[in-house]
Amino acid sequence: MKTDKRVHKVVSTVILVIVVGIVAMLWYLSSVEDNITRTDVPEITDTSETEVTDFASCVEAGNPVMESYPEQCSANGVTYVNPEQRRESEAQAQPSTGIISGEAGYPSERLPEDLEICLESVETNEIVGECHEVNVADYSIEAPEGTFYVFARTQDRPDYRAYYNEFVECGLRADCPKSGHQALIGVEVTSGGTVEGVNPNDWYDTSQ
Image (cartoon, rainbow, N blue to C red):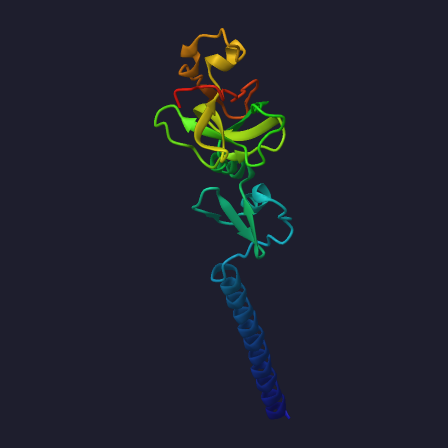
C-alpha cells in the first residue's frame, strides 16, 4: 500500500513538472515572438488620413518633390504643381506685347482692300513679324516690346511706304516742311501698354 502511494506521488510530481515546463515554454515562445514583432518589423505610418488635394498638402503628407521647375509632387497617381512657380513660369513664357492704335488713311474715297500696316525695326530697318491687314480706318494691332517705325502699304503702290512721321503730325498740309517726310517717328511699345494716335498716312512723299 505504501508502495502505491509512493508511485502515485512520483507520477503526480512528474506530471506537475511537465505541465509547468509546457507553460514556461509557451510563455517563452510568446515573449520571443512579441519581441520580434516590435523590434524587427519597421513601423508603417498610415498616411491615408492625410487628404491630398493640392501641392502643399502633397508635400505635407511626406510625398517626394520632383526636381523640376515648376516643382511637382505626386500622390495616389496624381501630380500636383507648385502654383507659385507655375505662375512665374507661365509669365516668363508669355511674350511681352502692347497695342498700337490710330487711324489709317488713303488719298481716295475708300481704303484699299489690301491695305496693311507694318512695323519696321528702328535698329535694323527690317519689317518685324507679319503686316496687319486693315479694313477700317480706325485700327488697333498687337505689337511686341520695342521701338518701331509704323507704315502702311498697298499693292496699288507696291514700292511705297506711307510712314507715320512729322509730316503727318503737321497735318499733311501743303505748307508743312518737306523735311517732315523723312522725320520718322519711333513708336515705343511696352508690355501691356497702348500707344494711340499713330496714323501712318503720309502718301505724299515724292522722294519715294
